[in-house]
Length: 453
Image (cartoon, rainbow, N blue to C red; front, side):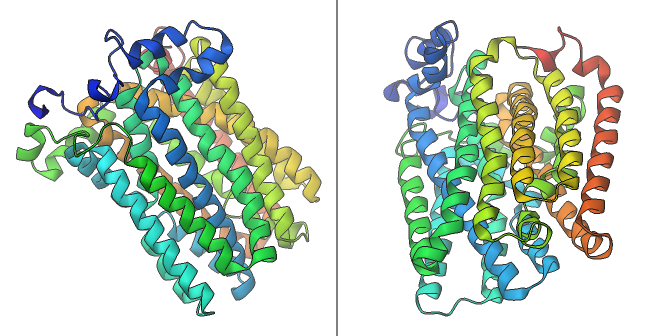
């Protein structure tokens, strides 16, 4: 019954479904905790003892694959159709417009249930993709239409990660979060590999309409699987009475005040904004330009570049599942952010696609060892009652990505890619060191909350 549920709990304690977020409860939660001291393979599979996670992981995987294919296909389409790197950066930026309203999505998730909101979001992906499929089938697709749909999708897509992490935080015990978050991260990493390679080749071999029909199917599959996450029949994360009586502004202010008063969370938010503004543009939205104009390669090599970065990230995520107990999240996010920027300095100087793929693979490994511990630290540090709102605030940091992309467009046109990428990496490296020094007392000590295993 709703009256017996704790605020912010998304059905992870739903005994009817055999999944519990309480380490002391018998059932799936205990299986997860027992898995932490099991052999490596058992550790890797421990989160799947929770029924909700067995639905969530494939649902997230389908969404991630579809999104990655869609980004690659439309990014290449915009570049070829418009012949403009500036419009390419505008297109990439539109996909993140929803970062500004991500805290509102987090609030709505806290009120109506994170699973319920995620179902609505994923149904919208399928509708938008189906629209593009019809337009491509009748040769009615044009850049202005792509920009309009990218804007609409961009209002929703950034909050997908908010809901994913909030659900994991509600259904997995704290001791199993690093392993579960690492496994969850493999959905995005594997999608960048498979989605990029498939997206780069599907249009060339099957045509835009067929490629988008496959994307629509993946989105529909994700929606159906999400229905099984963390309970059924509206039983997921029902709104707490206190949330229903308070104003949205007060609820969001409460979450912001909580982050502001918690130094290691504020440091993580700052670093998240920094890497989105200065690191991810170089290894994401600008890759179509790098492949064609720097390396003189085609869309197949674009897929290889994206897959190289993702392969490193996948290896990093798998590595974290096997070393979760020894990880100090706050330390790791700073150290490996520095390593990531150093590799981006090398990437800025590469002149061949083969070298670019190799450097991006190692850079992807480093970014995974930075970003997964950061996410775990935020989920652990956020009070369960406001977890959705805190993770929504975290998504505001993603707004650094469109800012970085929009600034990079004119800089590349004026100074070239190598100079722009070098500038981004140097600025990112210096500011990462500044964050580490400013919050050193909260990020480096073994006994600090940010480094709790």
